[in-house]
Image 1: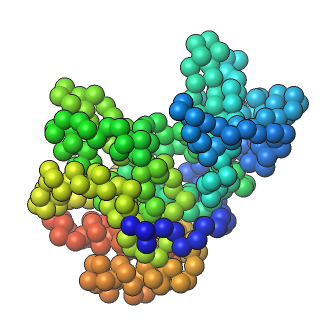
Image 2: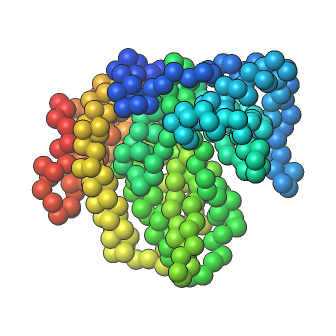
Length: 357
């Protein structure tokens, strides 16, 4: 829907001391050998096109000989931090094959392609400006979703792993004309993905902001939708912005759901996802509590957006529990508790994972 576009380009939210301390406590803060600004010292760039000659909105950047040699050394070290906990033995076989720059995203990321000289196999990771919204989104992805997500923070820089999968827009265009059995599975996973996003208030999940992970199975394939962009974590004021089903780009999958599922089936899948989220909270109760102790006190959006979302969530859930929420963190916390407790056949005290007033 057209009204679900962000109100304006999101600003970078600074990482304040309490969040930095949390990241240090849980191993996300490391001393990096390179900072984001170091990659801005490129000499030239050319547009990066896909296999069909279309603009990808990325540019391939080029550095002088000294910068290129230095970046090869430090970026391979960063890759070893991501993949082998800093084991330097792997470095002798690795080199930087290419660096791409995207001016389209809010954090203007660099994408680094690392290649193994022994077999020409390659992988990617991203260097981005540090943004508190993205960090909160990444942490909630790690804690509440079925997906593990590796990233590191240092000063003004974020390092993020590459999430493999078929981009959602490509998947919708090329992979929906499958068997009825697979279409049902796709629709099911979208219902669960929509529920995950709304429970933790992750916004802007248009088709190009998630990927589809396909796993061949005994009959057909299994699917999982994975968010790849977290900088719209609880920033906008519209509640529909946090439900992927309201974005027109996702309509083809929505139509599959309407064709193959009834309301009772969709409710079943929603309840299944809530149960899984509840179990993940129980398994990481201390870390989840620590995160919300920081998040509820942080200011990661404007007072106007907090007020708007507070009103819309109250209307959606038909409740007054959001009335005293004066931050996005408190709204996420209350929404998470409410969605898990609502019509859920367990004691509500199970989900009081932190006592935040």
